[in-house]
Image 1 (tube, rainbow over the protein chains, first blue to last red):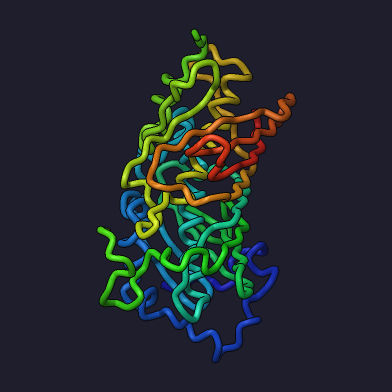
Image 2: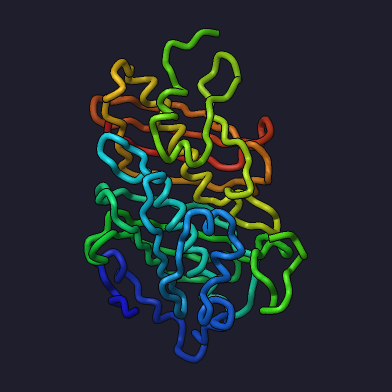
Length: 186
Length: 136
């Protein structure tokens, strides 16, 4: 499903061109590109919410959270609770960072700030797109936005930083498609 | 200690608070929320660790409920504070244990409130802190 590369102005402040085409080989496409299920299946809370991976590519990810009445935070207005958007964006951003790595490593959120531009329209599925616009040895910088109808009209924007290699055994994903990293019961 | 503000009733009224399973903590004399651990809250099953988004939502919920308490809620139909922005610092891995959160209202203005929230699983070891601005 095609998405506009720079749907909003907040999204086009810095282009991800720091990564040359050759280097941005999207090395983990085998895990996150083809089946696109790992990020959800290995995360109980994402599975519980029903989050879906819509699209992944070098340094970015798009996810969708289907609407359900349990997500409402303000029953009088029927508006989804802000923290739900935090969860969707945090998750999408984690995948965007994973899509910016050459090899699998543990990713931990350092901080995350969300601006609620407006209330999300009641009853709509929520979409989020995250882009890892800069990666250093230890830290990945991500920006994201979320919308319900038109990606050019987001209801929330977000900036987040992630620590790379936070915990050697901490990646929730298998090292290869065959095995689980530490044999936990997922 | 008797509390006039019926926090449980407000938690019951917010569907997402029910979904997360957030309850009022039994800590007497202090407004504190309690997030009982469940497998569905896990974000990283290997560590395992509670999902960062869940912690963020829990912090935000704590801020909102404490704000409701501070501005005085008498009618159940009162409008909830609207978040303008919310910033979360993740300080430690939140393990597969119950989590608690307390909020401090730094400034309660006529239109905007500034609230700090801390979540912890053990005393003096916060797992995450948050700062939110709300329209009240």
